[in-house]
Length: 308
Image 1: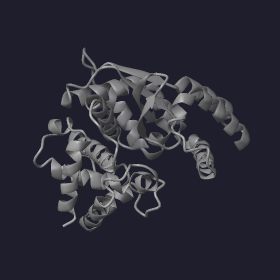
Image 2: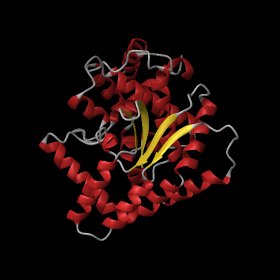
Image 3: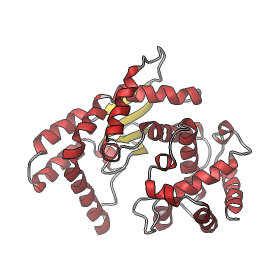
């Protein structure tokens, strides 16, 4: 957490360019501060009720982030997430409020940095800062804004101290790619999450060459497991599910923390390696123009190469 506080301060030692990237930022900081001022020191039941009042103010966002509350397992997971937030807040509140206070400058700095590499990035990206109950960053379509938005999870960032440079590079790229390829078909097979997460991780590595593999993958044990023998096995396994729909257990097992596998989110490691293989013969700007019909066969060949 000390690293995160220092990195936040470092952003504001430099002047911002006169024509900085135009971003639409929504901060829930005032409402969250009011929630915690009322909830801090109360018993768990009172804290949970106050949290629900805060959550209802941003119902359109949370309905895109929360587990499926129509199932017993989903509701149990949701309660665990709320209780984890409430339990950790006394240790993370200082960092959370600093993230809120610096949200506009932080986002402007990161947006300008990203646009130097991808100058065709569109203005007007929408970013929301709020507690996500455990997600560091996510791209979601909000009906209320009729747009795809980037959601920054202040609670997760404050708890883990993840690299802000890597996180913003990764998440900005997701938004950038969705803008650039919105006219192309994607998402009908398991090739899509491998491509999108692998490419975003590749770009965050490219923009942050001094970052470690654990920072790029945002998970230390995954970085330790991201070795040749595992990659060979994973490449063979993934080839068998490439054309299946990206949903349910098969998606969760490769890309979610709630995976039943010992190594969670291993699709990020495999995607990074597959995209890196493809990048040996294709430029990043070329790859950002591909839809599923273009990247799927290239991924399949990359997995064949990685499995040997």
